[in-house]
Image 1 (spheres, rainbow, N blue to C red):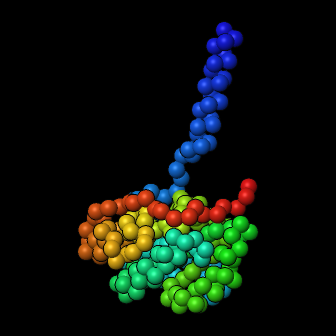
Image 2: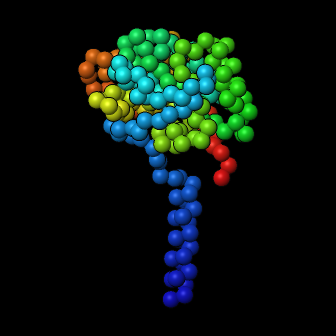
Image 3: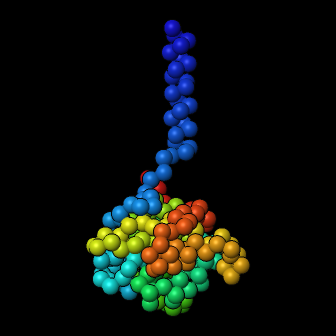
Length: 206
């Protein structure tokens, strides 16, 4: 009996360890309605999704200053805003890295980056990391396309921008672009998710 109890305890411990190594994914899924948020923009003003009544949706980009992958995709995020903001799907960029762990992602550095790269979209500071946590964002970049339905926003796409990190012009699948074009045409999104590739978000130490 003692051996059986010991074996059960060992198996339970192994299960707990495995669960901690592979935590249950959290955050929004495709089809979920998201909660609006309010974050400080690089111009010092608070921004929420409800601020713009005439949009059809948003392209939400969790990104940062320092990640090489985010830097490689920066011009493509700028191009997405140029292409789709006039059609009702502007970009909202969010920076959620802990600046203590990544000093190059401080609010002041965000302001400098936005100015030097001439961002024509909000670059919001998720200092508490609550928005990244709510979305389930894990990488930079990590993209979410949300469609406006009345006063709500429903997730239509989650994941990567495209399937070629090195050269966007050579990408055979441009996931975000295709998703927004399908939404604008009143069609369902053919590819609603694709694995986001990039640096992990630098979470605050517990």
